[in-house]
Structure formats: structure tokens, C-alpha cells
Image 1 (spheres, one colour):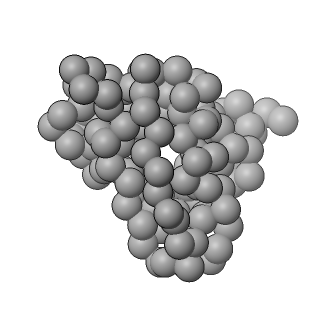
Image 2 (spheres, rainbow, N blue to C red):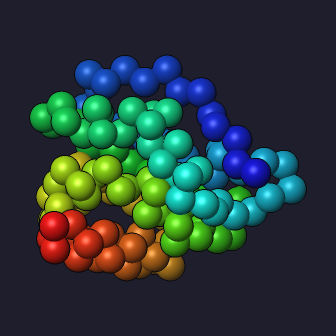
Image 3 (cartoon, rainbow, N blue to C red):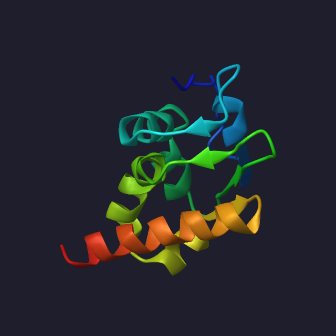
Length: 120
């Protein structure tokens, strides 16, 4: 089970970074679950941060992380795509810092979310 790290987020900062590996419980190496991803997005007030012009959020994935399930990524960014709809709009506000594998994994899930919200 993932732990929620308590961030005292100052939404007036222009660049903010969140290390997703800090969410891992001891002995775990992966994140999973749409509900867990959505809960983390609410906890760090992701949408609120992004609505302030000029803010950019970095999600860092270090070598402690072995896997991130698609469902976690979709939960984390569901509301973001509901608002911004297009990957190019999301990429102006969010960057993924990690291996090429994780960057591709996030982009793949972003394509799925983009497709979902373009149809609505």
C-alpha cells in the first residue's frame, strides 16, 4: 500500500518537484491503483498548482522505483486531462524526470487520457 507523503505545498512557486519514489513503503518498489494516483493528486493539490499561470511541476522517478502501474498514472492525471485535454498543454506544465522507460510510460498513458477527453 502506498503512503501519502505530506507536502506543505506553496502554490505560488514557479517550479515544484515531487519524487514519486518517496511514496514507496519500505520493501515495495512499485506504485499502483487509480484511486491511489487520484488521492495523491488531490493531496499535493496538483490541479490547483497547475491553474496558476507559470507554475510547472516535475515528477521525479529515481532508481528506487521498479514499476508504476498504468492505473496509478491515469488516476494521477485524470483531472489534469479533464481540464487541459491536450498532451502539448500538459507538457507545458508537467515534466517527468526519470529513465526513458518511465517517460514513455507516462506519455503512453497521457495519449490514452487525451483520447478519452477529446471524445467528450
